[in-house]
Image 1 (cartoon, helix red, strand yellow):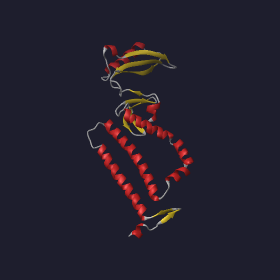
Image 2 (tube, helix red, strand yellow):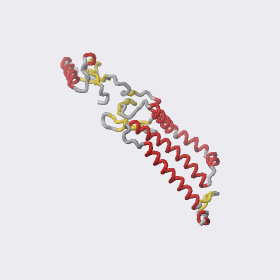
Image 3 (cartoon, one colour):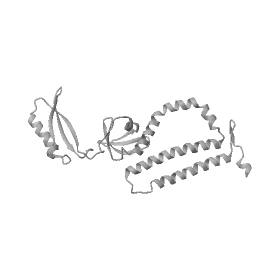
Image 4 (cartoon, one colour):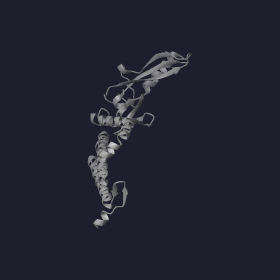
Length: 240
């Protein structure tokens, strides 16, 4: 039996591959896989947790999983008989090149960790990134998903939430003012235009109609072929 496990199947330079080494690698991988599966079920055992908390725990699991598999990979390399220090030293230039190529990915991963622990951005928040407004559907370790008003999913690298100016419309419960730009021909009846726009604003149930936040119309500009008006209104529904 001992002869079977120590039988040399083939060689890779000075590295010998035996059934014993293959079995060790398979056992390490299998045990790691089952432990990670158990850890994931343990983190997500509460079925009633809110979506944001569930997303944070999934991101935490992804981080732990990446770290664990890196350690497992180094263990398997040692089992196979490779000297990791020689391997790293011999491929230093390659690793530097890979580092430059992956710097954006690392930036996204670090930003994802900040978002995960600072919790300034949560699932369900309405965010404005790169002039795109969307509701946060998921916060992953490297990217986040925004659902736009048109029903499109936008995948946003996490570093944009940290390094760029973004607007979180959900941070406060204050009323928000929006405006809609409308162009009409130069021969239009200005009073009628104002009346129609105000009527559009007052007929919408989602808009605030209190005295201090009533819809209003303002003339904005002389366009090339139209008079530009703005209908301004207030609402609590920031994702209409």
